[in-house]
Image (cartoon, rainbow, N blue to C red; front, side, top):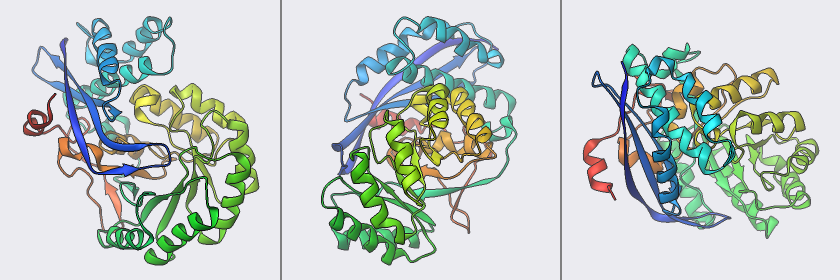
Amino acid sequence: MKITRLRTQVVHLPIDPPIVSAIFRIESTSCVLCFLETDEGIVGEALVHALNGRRIGVLHEMIRSLEPLVIGMDPTLGGSLNARAWKEMNYLGYEGVTVQALSGLDNAMWDLRGKAAGLNVSRLLGAVRTAVPVYASGELWLSASIDQLQRDAAALVAKGYRAMKTRVGPTDPVGMVARVRAVREAIGPDIGLMVDANQQMNVAQAIRIGRMMEELNLAWFEEPVVCHNHAGEAAIAAALDTPIASGETVYTHRGILRMLQAGAADILMPDLQRMGGATEFLKAGALCEAYNIPVSSHLFPEMSLPLLAALPNAGYLEHMPWFEALYGPSIVLDENGHAVVPTAPGWGTPFDPAAIKRYAV
């Protein structure tokens, strides 16, 4: 089997109602869909994205520029893609758009290998489990009132979720803790509750609000300070009993290694796109296992789920439903509120051709 073509398609997915985070207002996500076509008719699929459509054209062009790396390649020798890509990307560097573009090709290659073998990516890797703990991440934003937070949180429990995430900002710590407490009251003591500060606090603010939230039995306090301040993250982790989660904004397994060496977080959450694809994501997971640190995912639940199923130290799958318009409902919960790992070949959740036409740019 040989790869004969890289085909791409840009799609624009509205997010309605828009999301107000501590960083900015999110009204949409635009995606570059990547298709690796072969001489045997098997096609590998993946996507990368950019919020609010910003710089999606730059990302698209970077992906197109990497096409010579895959044309004529035997997908079963897919590891050579990364080996050659590191040389190709050396001059522009190993963070940012170069690595994000590589993720589109690398993830499509994994889908292609799974389909060629007739195995889901989780089974191709040697799965550890058939279901993964999952938390709902698409609700409970700063724009919601306390009443709305409680209604939405209760509705998520009714849907079968056993964990969920809400957000806090850097101002009005008393008011922010009141919002988190309201969610805890709505869901009860047995449902996992995460809190995300979206990197908007300084160390002193994070320690103060973290101590105020200790009584709420949080699963984790996520990204309290800017992502490159690993010393600050480590200081917060040392000061609090609540676990600190971080890692979604660092690049490749080397960025995860630096966090591990700094003791920056109790839970690491590599982002599949910023890792550069599944190949680097799995390296990050192995490093975390060596440090006895659990790994949770950031975004991309359809592709992250099979990967977490193959990691012994997997924690939670983040279920952000931004891409479901392309797949249809993609995350199925079992009786324990865990996400069921698909068994279909490749990622197990192919794109819907009708949806691609609907949202095509």
